[in-house]
Image (cartoon, rainbow, N blue to C red; front, side):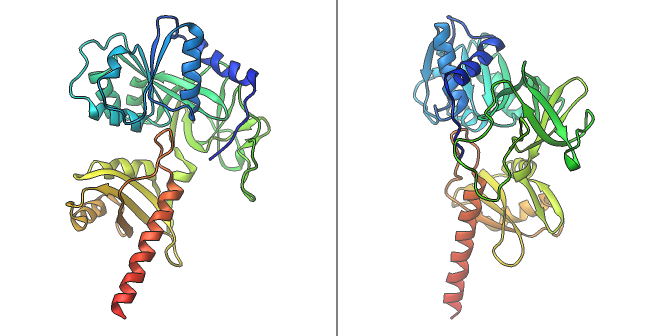
Length: 337
């Protein structure tokens, strides 16, 4: 969805970030659960090879054997990690020397605990972007302090929180995150769509996240601008809502988006579940979670589209929901006629 241009100096700078963070040397055996189209999946193998270590490339979804046993460092995204953990038939006997680094999304306490129980002695959260490189990192125990915790700013990274009018906010106040690093791009290699505001402004980058920087420097991500759902003035966090909906019996995957099937916006919930799941019962359970009087569309889909980091591509979900809603409406009109 975005194209950046890296020259040799940019790649060297991104690799230097990994070496400066430590934990990579000639004894490292890296298991990469991220593909090369992701920046972490590209940088980490190069950094390990630079250090003289070994790399095992793992296709997301691969379940043969137990590649974790051979690795001292594992990198993955939350969604892919959960899939790998579910495929394991037993916990690893020796976990103490294995470090798991998670990229691309908030890490729940539940996922962290399962990873510590099954594969790793330490779980580290890594926050960054294609545009900026590494921004922050920290031990996953920090999510007990705040569910969106991503650690502390890396050397060379500056993170601030802005409020209305782009005014910097005091510590502990939620607002829009903006970032500056020594290895960040200054623009995209391809033009952004006409009418869209560039996320690069005055040497800073807006990753699109909302968050908090606490007095001791801890950074917590509370959501994304594109993940705030506004239905007739009622604002909902898509991430929080999806976490609640995902816990319902029978729900395998779920995404909440805003669609406009008529003259007004509507909340739509796309759910992946077995055909044996009664959607009417599921809808009733979901209604108990949502604020009173919030109407919503419930659509069953075969799968949710995800990018290489495992993140749901919300625009594609919204388009698919609208397609299903319109097709159903046309079929009903034809039947009534």
